[in-house]
Length: 316
Image (cartoon, rainbow, N blue to C red; front, side, top):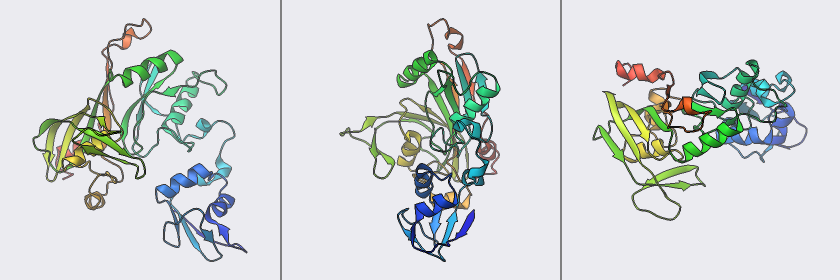
């Protein structure tokens, strides 16, 4: 955390003052930091248009790597990633990487999953900043969710996997911990998912209505520990925040989820991000010669830290 004591001769907009102090804080980064409550003016969240005056106190809960513009290497953003991505599988067509919780897949920051992947590929001699094709994400995960993400190395792979994922041909299995024990222990949940764009959330409704999309989520309880349950979850139809909203709709929100969960329990158990991991990907049957070798293969991420702690009763 950085604490700034404002020193200016005349009232200045908060965003302008912060940009003067830290040129690396672009408008996109400032807006993202404000949304995530990482900027406090005199102890409170204030709009970036607020005028600051001499003596005001600003607290920034932003990494030094982001604030310190002098450390930034000139050139493309991937050169400033904090390190290469953790690779689970690599072949000429795709690379499957393991995203840690808290890291955005892409966005305004230099340190994203995609940029870490580009850094890895550059270190392997497979990608340079002037290449005609830039490896691309084939799907996304929420920032707070960990697990496997497919990155295409070629335009053909990008087209193929975007279509396969859109058509639900790639089977996705998640591991998660819920606050509350689902009843029954194993079930398939249905309903419709409706987005609330103004609030940045979704909700599950029982009846079809304008804008709502049908969803289906299958869960299986692996073990229970006190108030908690460790689940294996399969997405039959994958939508934004689907697992998080669906489990919350039956009274068993994902542990650590600040949007749909129990924040009192999250604080008590010191969970910063939701206990949700995209653990397993199973490929469909591919007929294309360059992709046949991937047919039916299953890839798994390392089990997240909470898996063993719920299993042995440490987390409960």
